[in-house]
Each structure stands twice: as structure tokens, then as C-alpha cells.
Image 1: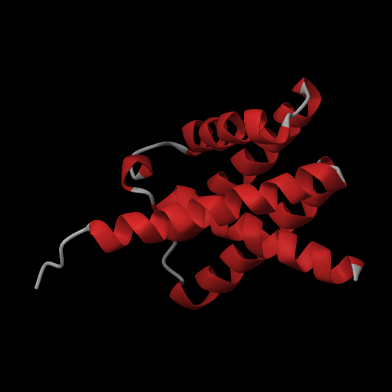
Image 2: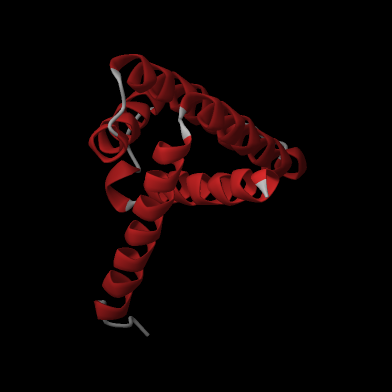
Length: 128
């Protein structure tokens, strides 16, 4: 049961990161700016302490820096696998940083963001 919870948390965390990484406004942000934005967005939602905020920021900074380096590399085959491994590392770090209540809040937050994104996507006219 605990492994299931951790797996679900990881998938939701990855979804949050992917949504943030691919949002139109974030395309020109540096890894530092992205990490600050994610940590700032999560702080009021999860009621992060200052120490947790700094750890969340550091974890995301490491992740976004690795992803940027991997995306600029030429090896297409290893790139996807290495990014996947980086996401797993981030998931592990986040599970160490957050308590169970915060994990539950994070799951709800990600679910809400996903639903809002789907609603927004439906309202956009198709460009055929």
C-alpha cells in the first residue's frame, strides 16, 4: 500500500513538473526561474516551512538543470531515459521532503490543475 502511494505521488509530481515545464509562459525561463516558480506555487498549497521550501527549490533546480543539459545534448536515445531517471530522483527527493499530509495536498493540487487544463483545452478553437 505504501509503495502504491509513493508511486501515485510520483506520477502526480511528474505530471505537475511536465505541466509547468511545457506551459507557454515557461518556455524562456531558466532552470533557476522555473525552480523558484514551482517552489513558490507549492509553498501556499502545501504550507511548506522555510526549510522545506529551500529543499523543494533545490530539488527542482537540480531537476530542471539536468533536463536542460539533456535536451541540449545530441544523443536522442539516452535523452529520454535519462530524463525519466531524473524524474524518479526528483520523486524520491520530494517524498523525503514532504510529510503524508502534504503529499495528499499535492495530489489534490495536481488533480485540480489537470482538470483546469482540460477545461481550458476544450475552450480553445481547433486550428485545422
